[in-house]
Image 1 (cartoon, rainbow, N blue to C red):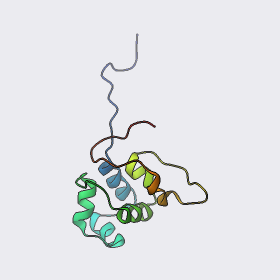
Image 2 (tube, helix red, strand yellow):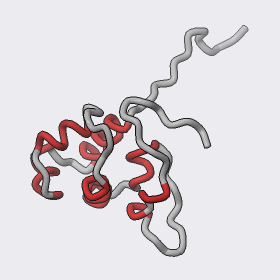
Image 3 (cartoon, rainbow, N blue to C red):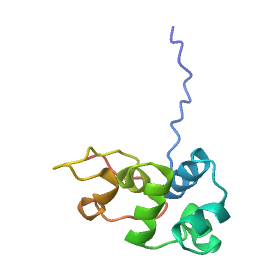
Image 4 (cartoon, helix red, strand yellow):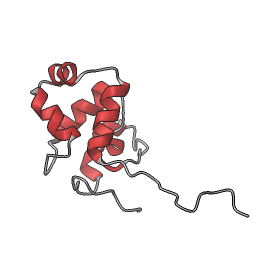
Length: 107
């Protein structure tokens, strides 16, 4: 007899979900984050709603730094380790392409 439900569900977080979670975990409103990283509040909302076809590196790096999360986690849901002494928030160049609303595949 199994103790696990037969209809298991593992939620998948989109990049927008992770952007929102990072902001909320940092205790910031959309307006506060927008002011801190120098963008409009509508830009913050667009990222959180997965309305960006390709995120801007400057915005993603600033978001990651302000919320103290790795860029790799924001974009893929996986936190990469810094290499050669380079902070994780600067490793965006080595990440696979971002596709809004699509969960990353396992490497």
